[in-house]
Image (cartoon, rainbow, N blue to C red; front, side):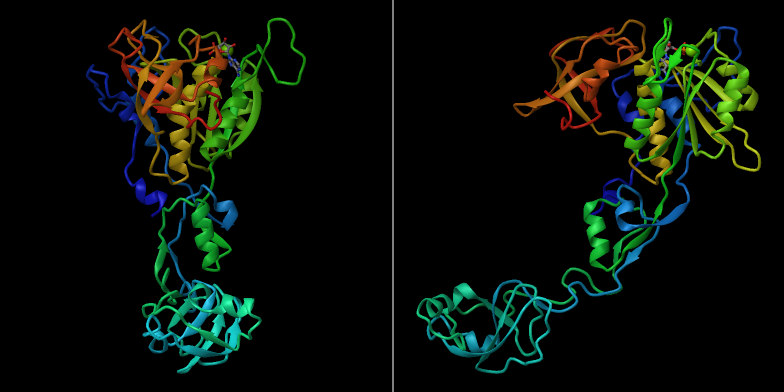
Length: 461
Ligand code: AMP
Ligand code: MG
């Protein structure tokens, strides 16, 4: 059983939309340079934006890595076993390796066998067990030639002999066990040549162990995507630097980079681009060798910033409004690169919650697709709201909630102010409860769909 096998199907974010009843019209248009600045913007459903973005990502190229570094990555080769596992028939118990014919009647007439030698794990006995004889054997030791059954110590008179100071050169067998008892046959787990881990398997601790058990120290996997992270705005200051009036600290670089790591990517924080053409161009240039560039801010309608102009100069950009709250404004496009395939750019909104939520919805799936994952979306549960969620303007609301399980059901409690700048209420949440766009509110006590961001391990409930 592999994670891959669980997840052959793409669970796109359309699952999240269940409960929205307005029709979805996706005519498949791509809006190259679609920013027209005249107030007309397309309002896209979350699923439409998702589909227009995810189609631009494919699994990346492959690398050979030490097994431990493969954790969380997708195998890019079939792993066939070079050996039988276990390599030799071995004992499942500490006991005596015997011939089954010698012990077949032990229940009525316990036989006494001569103990001709002992074999421990790591040794191979050079002796053969013949009629009337036994070899003392430890768990994991290869079963000696001739023997076909192992009788555990508990089913012999070994303890009595020890107590009475009698030698262990012979042993009484007190129980007739079935033929083959406590013998693990060679190849019981894996046969030589067998396909053990197919291409596409996600490496978890068990797979790391399976590979090591086959003697493999390296594997070929799909490499991690490098995601350049760029914040934009004249008002931003890097954490650690002194804050001057009118400025705020840049939280998006840290939150988005952390989300990149959590998704399995490698972030490259470019820093802060100021709202002027030269600085934006300079910063974007440094992302030239990334697999994805994620910017934040400067993409909303009527924005003072230069970001839109610069991006449009450098490629085919789309500036969308997505029918979701938070995170309505969104940009996606392909920037030209010299001598290379274009660089995908995901432009997140500036507000800290919006930025992280837009990355969650559109950036994380892209990272996972590049990692070769089939399962792109988070798990969802259906729960009961303990407080209301409001919907003021016909967008799908993703409300920050604390999710806990009580009496066999999931309960979702809104974590406080839901403004797109209130990052602490996202910090207190482990799920996003959905209010469909066609409802004005969800009341306490109503059923609600919840995207699980994590499963409570890190959230105090
Ligand atoms: P903008 O899209 O540039 O209008 O930004 C929207 C809001 O997000 C403004 O209040 C910005 O100050 C804020 N913002 C933009 N970038 C960041 C950032 N990197 N960290 C924290 N807040 C930001
Ligand atoms: Mg700005």
